[in-house]
Length: 166
Image 1 (cartoon, one colour):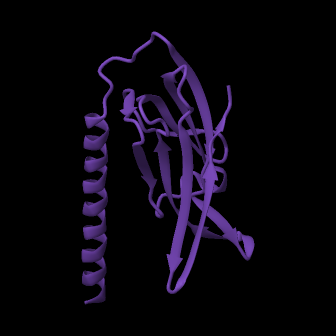
Image 2: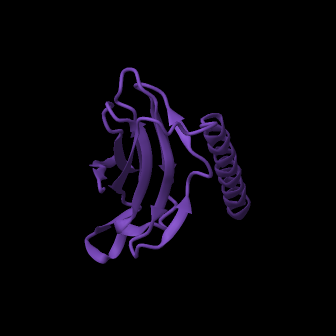
């Protein structure tokens, strides 16, 4: 009975994850920038540290985390464009390219991506590199990572902010 119940729970989690992945892809396709504007645009690159897990008690015990990656357009009037969102692990190896095409983020809009708690491929030193475009007179986009975990009645959360690197 326990094995059957466990199998059903695992199967339902797998289908939820697959469904979430389909929704995320559809969400990205809705944001596709038909053509990137070039005139009066400034290119930028931002580094964001994220954590798939942190160490607890010793280097041999980890605590897995869910990471919400928040891409924010802080401009009241101008759209920004994200051309690249690449996820790297602790060793600096590319794990995943989140974008197949450039996307837009409307004024004052926030776009989010989630690294699930069960995905610890990034490790304790995971990071993102974002390439973006904005009007020269606009503010830079804001990139934040929010890492959380809950176990029983215990909760853990912290944030990171992106750093422009060019």
